[in-house]
Image (tube, rainbow, N blue to C red; front, side, top):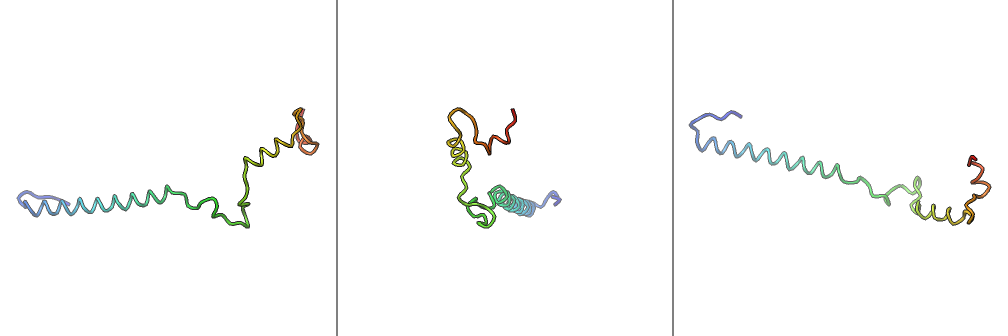
Length: 84
């Protein structure tokens, strides 16, 4: 938009309208960015046919550590993959 000298109130109202339009665009942009930054689906909303909803990685690792013998050796099935 080009502002010319001498309009006074017309120029001010045109500038106000342009600034209001820019504010509206910025508000829409901010809303889009907030939606983009938010997680799309919570973990518990995953499909139960594909994901094990009760899976707890920390508990599984603790269970594996509990099953290892106190001297640090592994069970035969786990030790088969270890190299000397």
